[in-house]
Length: 309
Image (cartoon, rainbow, N blue to C red; front, side, top):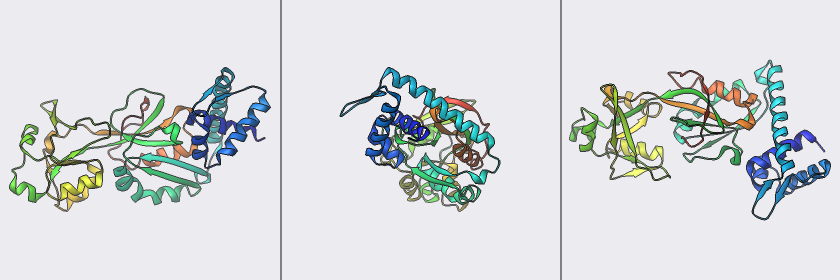
């Protein structure tokens, strides 16, 4: 029995919450994971997992063994990282998750740079706007935007972006451009809705304070490319990240509105589970991703939540 490999499988089973989910994240048959757990318990002479058809939980021995396995795997990662001199020697599979807009507008266009720098890393990019559970989905790290609250995840801030309110010249020819955020109430605002059903609000700076505009839209979507298409199709005023809208501003297809009321830069962070430490592969991706966002924000390590996207 490969004891180190079996420890890794055991930790993944605990974090995933089931044998099936662990097998999926490991790209291994469920039977192999089950057999590994049976062999481990036989080798140790104790029961680690309580299994039913629907639930999986740790025994007292399992809790203690899990904590030690995490510590051992963490120490191994740290030792290997300290000994590496040639970053091109990094090898392995890295799974990252990020919003669609960041994947298509920021990461993928420059991904060839990362691949040349780290040819041994096989990277799987999950591009979606849903908020996934990193541990249960087997995700090594995720790019998230916005303010982050406290939780068991660790976040490293890598940059920021600005929200740009804009509309097409055609729309503005029939609807005079707003001079203050309050003027937006007289305009058609294209909405972007999230799965949690919360109403959308746009925030602006005003005389050193902030002003919030409630978006009451006739048309709304929940996907960025569709949202951009509505804006380009003269359906009304939209609010988009600068990394998405900049090419359209430069070509004159969109016009920025209320630039003097822009809110502060929105932070962009990379999250990863504390139990997985900042592995050499994740560190390589974090260091590269930090070069993609400008202006760069200080690299601050914080306890953060996975709920912000």
